[in-house]
Image 1 (cartoon, rainbow, N blue to C red):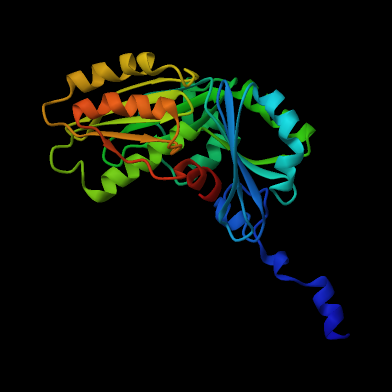
Image 2 (cartoon, one colour; image 1 turned 90 degrees about the horizontal axis):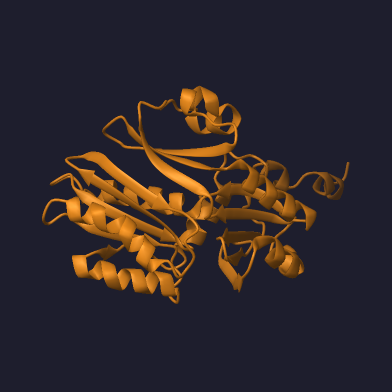
Length: 290
């Protein structure tokens, strides 16, 4: 057998992770492939392409219902990905709650996808999909529950246009997890054990309060739209008001610098000394690389 014959059947592609494998980080699953990331809200869709080297590429934004935007942009989106693969962030029709005593086994993320009843027990609802973020030093957990029907409709729209959703998540929840990890890793909460974290993504909002190293309160609202700043402040203000004097306030958002919602909300939060943890293109890095 000639060397050329061997090369024709064996390539490094054979050793790449399966693009359908949800257990593998996105950056590994799509190494050497172009990929598209979508961020979907109630009234708007934003998107970003990634090159075969994992670098950020084309950016786009369009108002409207996802199905209508997808139909209009399908050809463009297919051109931004190899094989139509996409990472999808949905920021509508979900709730984030504080729970206690949920399973913390190493295989919990896998079970949430395959057998969520085992993790959640009586809290399980057949009509929901879930994600969990655990407090590192207590029994508290944040539980995301999003409408399964909405996820299925989104996936069906994409598949009908030749697109393949590799991961579907909630961008707001991803931002909260990222911020919490950074706060604890940096030791910012270790002195007093107090902070208030506010996260915003495509018009959805969440506020988390920690006091004495315990998560005390969490409030969220999805699908406010980008003109819902006043409603967002009604959700945030009670947590800030109940925090002990001198409690740090942190803010994190999807990283669109020209977002009117982000700008107007941050102007209000600056009055209580909030620190902005947002980074450029943060949502894309979280959704499409981790």
